Image (cartoon, rainbow, N blue to C red; front, side, top):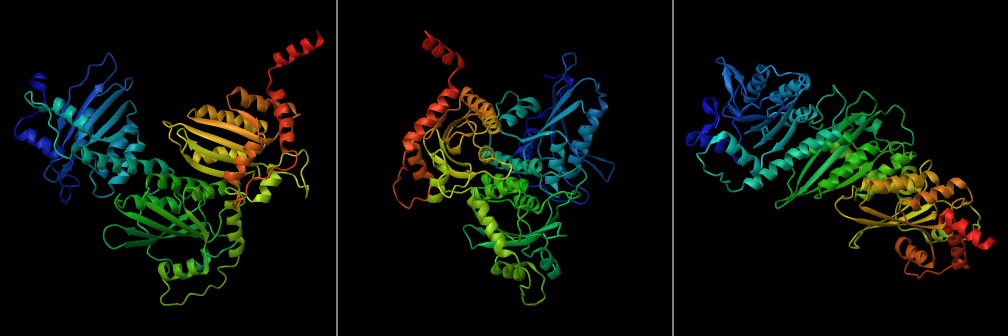
Amino acid sequence: MWGDRQHSLEQGPGMKALLRLLRPDAPAPPAAPGLLRDPWGLLLFVAPFLPARARPTEPRQLRPSLLGPEVPCHAESRLLEQIQSWDLDPKLHYRVTCFLSWSPCTDCAQDMAQFLKENSHVSLSLFASRLYTRGHYDEGLRTLKRAGASMAIMTSREFEHCWNAFVHHKGNPFQPWPGLATESQKFSEKLQRILRISAALSGPKGCPSLTQDPMEWIRPGTFFFHFPSLLYAYGRKSCYLCFQVKREGEGPPSYDWGVFKNKVYFEACYHAEFCFLSWFCDQNLSPDEHYHVTWFLSWSPCPTCAEEVVRFLREYRNVTLSIFTARLYYFWHPHFQDGLYRLWSAGVHLDIMSFEDYEYCWDTFVDHNGMRFQSWDLLRDNDFLATELENILRTTMSPLQQEIFFYQFGNQPRAPKPYHRRKTYLCYQLKTHEGHITAKVCLQNKKKRHAEIRFIDNIMARKLEKDQRFEITCYVTWSPCPTCAKELVAFARKHSHISLRLFASRLYFHWLQENKQGLKHLHASGIPVAVMSSLEFEDCWKEFVDNQGKPFQPWNKLEQYSKNITRRLQKILKPQNDLENEFRNLHL
């Protein structure tokens, strides 16, 4: 096949060595002084993709060797030396594919990442049979990933390819061993978690490793300075996260606890929430256990951290999270409010720390040396912050109060008493194409962020599967403004698997040309826009209002107002040529 230059494993001891080295259920290598890897580790590589005028290189196998009696040289290092000896043309592109019995150790991963940075004309794909889990292996894999290397766990397909390309099998077909697919899947899931954390939690260049062990305690002075419930906490640029993890499985429950800290100004690399998630993912979470996680935070999560927590909880369904925060971080900012709502909608329990929470933190996380807890001024603005959090969640949660529904959704030409300006409320129902309802949510305008934009943010945060179809019905008090109409059209085009319908109680400044164009834009883009009739008002009452079992009672002239508004909408949406034809007929 390759003539005298073939470097294949002979059947017999060599073939058995390959199978032994590549089997995912093989034991981890023993630690040895000066050696970070198994001295019998195996790396197979091939460069199958080269430019048309370049001649493909043959598959090769490399074993680790020793440069002298004491200096170890791993197979990855020999690979890099081999590639550098080829004097590859920097004007061409080379793709090297490697099959490894163990994933690279930290040092080898760093060397390979540096090689890729210095040789942009070479791309590297790694397929590992098992994960080498000694030292800071995870950080090495993340560094290699950030350098552009492609990494995956070998499946039966790669094992078979390896057998055919590198083993002198004498015509014998590859025979998978028992448990191959199961072990491969386990390693693959672990690798994906490591690399996903890398993509989401990587900090600025030059920052230290994200994965770190938590602190056991904080000092009493630190606790009293950073944890008081203050409306404005000047000088407190650090965030402390005290956590407790309760594990429940077949045996008695076990507990972990500790403290993470971050600095929130620009020199900092990671927020405390990110540090916890990275540490928690490294604990080899079992799908057969349930984890109850409790956080006590000096500041509530920022929107970025909130989004990462939501993503984490979506992946780990056996984890529940409760967050008790001393203060609300930028609680007046709509973006930060939406972050808190996303946490709440993902099932996270959110609350302001109470006296009992402070006392528990003092006993559990503070090195108090027997000193009794004194609340002092810790709860100064506690009631105000609790009210603010309740208001933030109330503006985005179902159900609506009855008086709010009748006043805000009423379609009368003039607002009824007390004659306040009516605001924009948007109630939407999300269901699958099969009819299963997955969410019912009410939103309202916030400062500089209309309800329609918050609706888009809310749907985007749910990360709906693109291979499944969804239907959304929206009831809105005012028809969308031109800007919101444009955003809704862009959203619908980007998410073709979502069908959207809009029902408006009233038309927003319908006599203005720009508002007419916005409605036409929605209609022309295939988003149905209609006026709410008694049927839609009744459905909205049943689905989104705290009706306490009472039937919907239409207000006076509801149907008449609805028909009038419908005629105005039809005139706006009617094509111009149809209006001209009607005018000609009238003239004749």
